[in-house]
Length: 112
Length: 116
Image (tube, rainbow over all chains, first blue to last red; front, side, top):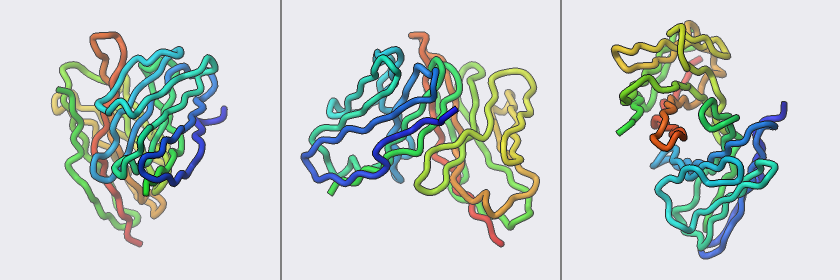
């Protein structure tokens, strides 16, 4: 089985722009979670989607949003980028969201 | 509130030496427990997991972990470290929420350096 894939792997944006990241889960997995990883804050949970519905949300501003499609693929959008949004964004998929999470390689976002 | 503590930010061991990475969690019941490894610039790779049953869990790459309920710990061990084990290791717990969904909490990680 193919693992979790994330595109693009690297992104450079400037402040004020917006960005969309994509995640394709392992086939058959219906839960997709997004995390932000920075050296100072570690891994922070953004949100989880299951069957096209946001089921859980972390403590991030409304500039961070996401969605999930009927094939379980998920996108994450960040609007009005700030320098502090520079991070590695990780996507994880699981069968139901109540079991093991498998991570993708991440998207490295740099905001200039 | 649920939390995961990895008390060692950095650990340095010599190649061939044994390794133990510590993990303590705070949760009312027994959560799901995980260890992940992350190489620089990469995602997290699952090493092993504990859901229930035998408290000594075997994982990939020769790693094992032992769940100790009385100590709320899930320490990761390897009898002989290889240079390729140099990476960052994360302990995580999965805990059910009242809504019926799950929350995954990660420790801050332990960076392992291996000396030749």
